[in-house]
Length: 314
Ligand SMILES: Cc1ncc(COP(=O)(O)O)c(C=O)c1O
Image 1 (cartoon, rainbow, N blue to C red):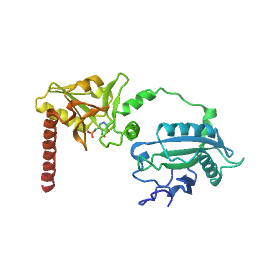
Image 2 (image 1 turned 30 degrees about the horizontal axis):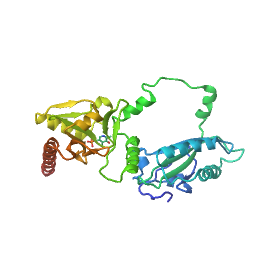
Image 3 (image 1 turned 135 degrees about the vertical axis):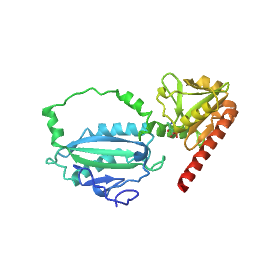
């Protein structure tokens, strides 16, 4: 079985047009046998990079340019333990040869090189290369032309919209956590995203709240944050308790001046932020409002558990 982790279950055959031999983590094998782990971060959070090369008559066009771009993206992404560029170049050429695409009679093909961080944040990365013969439609575009349409978003705008959905494109959070790990090994560390205006938005995996004079303040969804389920519950519980709730921008100065700061997420539930960039915030401890909301949150969860049990008995 080709692949670091082997695999089981049904055979997933390769998509049409993919050449029969692929390269995965240093070895060649059959496309239909090539598997990667369910826990690969490429699958779980789009935590990876790729290049698509064009090959014709056995030559990989602009190979060095592609490999240089790949190396630059790998460095940005802190992807470590990658095969060196000459190893990748040799693998691509050998892959073309094994698929009958080398030499002057070799047809036109695309070669897809995919690198994911692998199963662990520390790697080793998963590295896969496969080739595909170009389709006639692809080749014919050169003469038949392309029909242009305008998309309803900019490329950056689409990325911004993505932050409001829990898509696999979790790269900003993943890379944020990796960069943070370079600063501290403390497992309590959470990175916070800021927008261009210096507003704090949310954590890499949590929503942000502050308490000001008893009122609860949290950045509005319109700032492009993830609509956290725990955020929604905490807002509901706070309103039910008669607490003033405001959805407003929170910059660093406001956070530092707040009486309390806390984050929410499904698994954390509600946790105080006790320090920000090394300085204590929110009194450096769990404050009374957060404590009260924690208790309400716990009671809310207990209620849900009891309801589940009752439903199971019915
Ligand atoms: C970016 C981001 N914000 C907020 C949250 C909190 O969402 P929830 O309360 O639904 O777990 C998460 C959860 O992973 C997240 O990834």
